[in-house]
Image 1 (tube, rainbow, N blue to C red):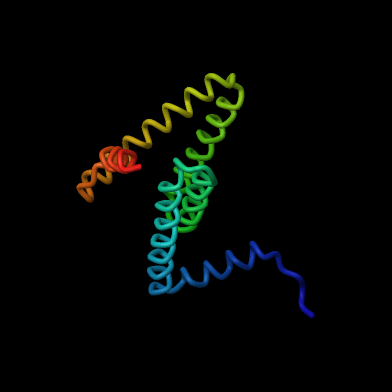
Image 2 (image 1 turned 90 degrees about the horizontal axis):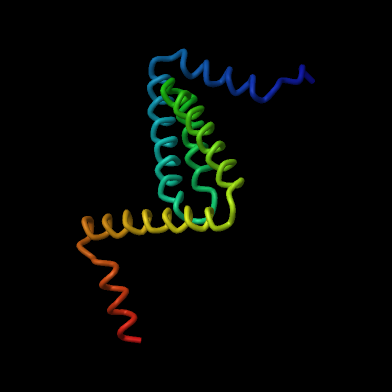
Length: 135
């Protein structure tokens, strides 16, 4: 049995071997870009909902940071500001947190309404009113 290797070190060696070949380097850059971009996009869509939206965005940025220098800086910036926001909101009173939640809900609702109206021509507010009237 050979010497035990650290998994992180072996992963770096694999990436370095892929990067040593021009075709491998391009394929790795494209693959990381597509996968990281997809994960970030999914995370952004999930931010307004309960759950790990920001964590998914940060995961996507971490994937992108494997190949893109700009993503490393954006990842550090995002982590720093999400953590400071989380700590700040956690120190606030319940009424302040409720107000921030309400403002966030209204903002996200406006974004969703506008997106659906412009993309599909559907007025969600009118659809909801029609649905309620029919009940």
